[in-house]
Amino acid sequence: MKTTAGRGKLRRMTTPFHVRHASAILASGGLVACPTEAVYGLHCDPLNPAAVLRLLACKRRPLAKGLILVAADADMLLPWLAPLPVAARRRMAAAWPGPVTFVCPAAPWVPDWIRGEHDSLAVRVTDHPLLAALSRRFGGPLVSTSANPAGHRPARTPLKVRRYFDGKVDVILHAPLGGRARPTTIRDVLTGEVLRE
Image (cartoon, rainbow, N blue to C red; front, side):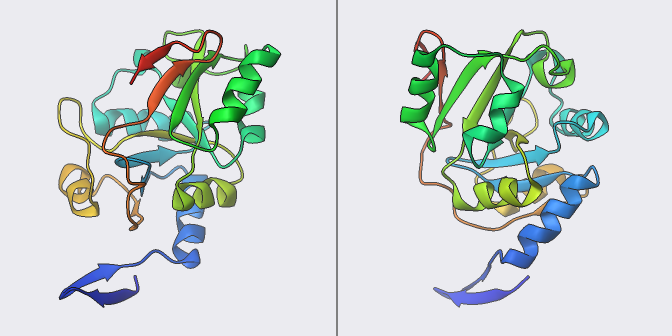
């Protein structure tokens, strides 16, 4: 990766080439670590069950919990959702792109390796430019879950990702986090209720 000097340290900078490479890795069933609004996330193709199960094994996360999908725009997510009332769609439109994840009724076809034991699906349109660029290049939503094994604090740097998952993640994209101190707010799309502040 290209490096530039800054305050006496070398910083790796992600370029469009790296985004294209990471997208190709995702398409081939690989795992990509990428910064999100608050922490580094692990990402994979949600329609590739082997990739999702590999991601869950890295995190030691039970399949039953379900996963979040992130995307560059809402149109990428709508096929994954059951039809929503107008008020719910307005609620999403007012918050996106941005650091709000909505729990929505899932479309009937959504596989259990994404939903877990739920009939709902957590989705977000990210405002992190690198994650949005990766989703756009990939051409659809991505699984997104914090980059940490169960019971450990989420990684906030590429170095921490490497320490947690050395040899288990195919690509680590380097860029600043989105500036939030905590993971995104989670809301019920039908009621607006805050499920996680």
